[in-house]
Amino acid sequence: MASSPRRMRQQLLIDPQPIDTLRFETPLYESGVVHLAGVDEAGRGSLAGPVVAAAVILPRAFDIEGLDDSKKLTGKERERLFDLIAKAATSTAVGIVKNDEIDRINILRAALRAMRIAVDGLSVRPEHLLIDGPHRIEHTIAQTPIKKGDALSRVIAAASIIAKVTRDRMMCDMERKYPRFKFSVHKGYGTQLHMSELAKHGPTAIHRLTFRGVKSSD
Image (cartoon, rainbow, N blue to C red; front, side, top):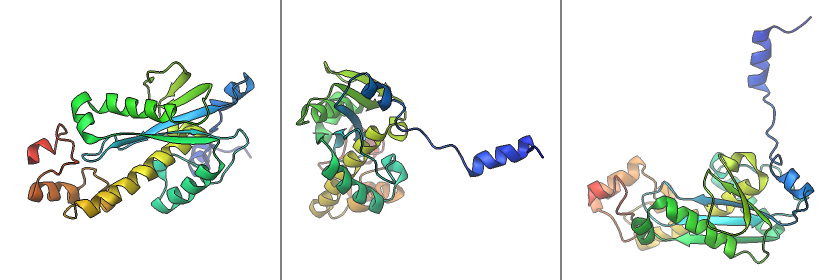
């Protein structure tokens, strides 16, 4: 007996088709690319601290269970994957742009600059870059920007985890310097806790003074 359209829709919701996270990578490998780098950033929407980007080159045969967009993972899962990626990667590098430069040049330009710094820090020069988001970076290396790329590309997902874990660790360290702010909890994002801290204590030296919410608390 054939399934009804309603039953078919319900089945799709229960058992969605998996995303092919090699859909952008396989054609590049087949065209002769050997070293393909994924590039992503973390901290763009935060009110404090740096924006951190990562560039990661993975072996083509690299496969690991649970690799996904860092925002979909728990902190424990990210830490586990961070160690596995760092160990298996052909090369990884990070780029950091601090809050004062973010205020000076704006967050978009700062994020793209951090990405370029990360790419330039790789020990192996990639032949192609897959970049999370719609924007290209200033570089001579061929590149493909991909909207929501951290959910669509394995190598971008790896970069998102390296960037996120690196930045989270930095923000935890910042809490020791600024103990009135629970940076280990909110990582500088505009949570209710963070906004109440700003209202009570005012911004620190690592806050982005041009960001809405920080300006109003100054």
